[in-house]
Length: 388
Image (cartoon, rainbow, N blue to C red; front, side, top):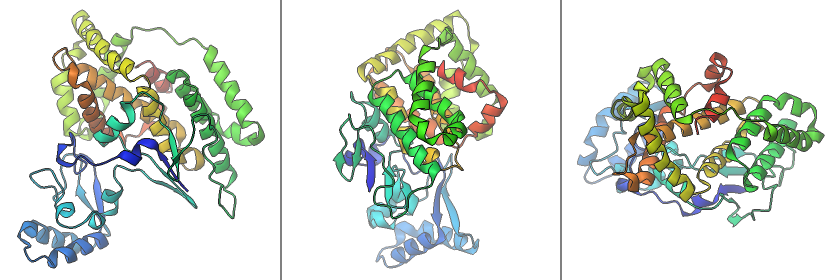
């Protein structure tokens, strides 16, 4: 059974037109066996001049006796990327010769015994464009057929199994279906995220009451629905939060594009005075227009991240609270960066700009240790919710 988010059916790589190539800005790995296959293909070419650079690199990598090698890192592009920002392997051979990681990207497959679940990574700007800039809730496609929006229990990982999944996976499946129902019912995005976070915290209790999972889930929903959110000046709070966040984070861990955004766009805002708060507010109003234009922008971002990483709810070894916290952090940073660069002069390019920024932010922060952030500040989730 193949489960996908609907936009993936239409996805096509835009190649050299991409605003932030997937061939750099994050770690790209290749097995030695994949490099051996690539080398064999190159050796058979009549004109190998274009790949002279690879011969030396290949010999050095092979001599290291490692099973897996790094082809690109956070501030470096893959050596197969040419001057036209296209992959030399793809141009000269076929998609199938690429290392497995490159073949899959931007798809993020999650495998179960008889199911595969696919979503797209926001490290790819084209995924952002297709998933977020539309005016409907993302649909789920199962074996090529769209599930109707009223179909709540879209996920049935036991289907076609000779042996049932363990109880934790089965209960996680129930929880994912209930979370997706909140999205389909178009609940307030902050309420949905607070429910997901609380369910993650209370997961052990839910495991002790498997028959009552739905009842407990909606009890949590009703309680949180009645809670009052603290009212703050969100513009000033954002500036204070991110000034503090980027002052304590290890600067060596930041990727070059993020460092440039901080230096070029954010520096003046971190002064935090009446002028910077007012300017930030004006820019934020421009960003709010984007949200009004695409009314399910934030819903679709979090549907993509929660359904795309549903194994965090079905595998006991994974931490769903860390997953949702990291997703909120990456969105909030991207939103903040986009607001700091906005003005009336570039308002028309906001969709292009946000897609590029989200790609850069995803690559930079997807590996952050959010569990450590929770340990250092047990109120971090509530602070993140106040950022948007």
